[in-house]
Length: 94
Image (cartoon, rainbow, N blue to C red; front, side, top):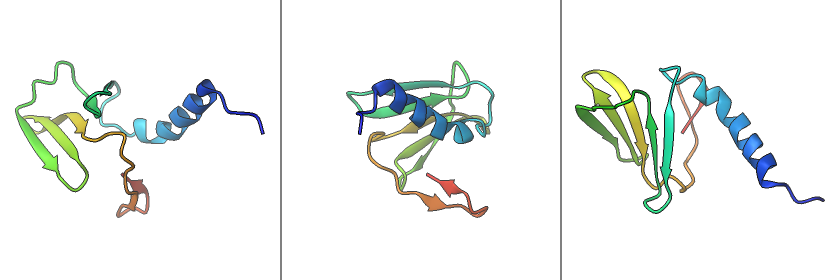
């Protein structure tokens, strides 16, 4: 069997992410990955100017809020596999 190219793998990865990305609360998002720190930053507003942060310790995720609006998500240890669970609606959540 032929070895998959990096481009083909990237296309597959993005294709799998699309259903999740289109459900984001904002139409625009900025994604940055710090490989050295292994932290993924997802900004839903630019600039974030967050006023509050909620830690989801069991998931290693920080939710960043400005007032009551979610403006960003920080994923700690981003390269670590995440446990997939089923949400109330039967869909997978990470």
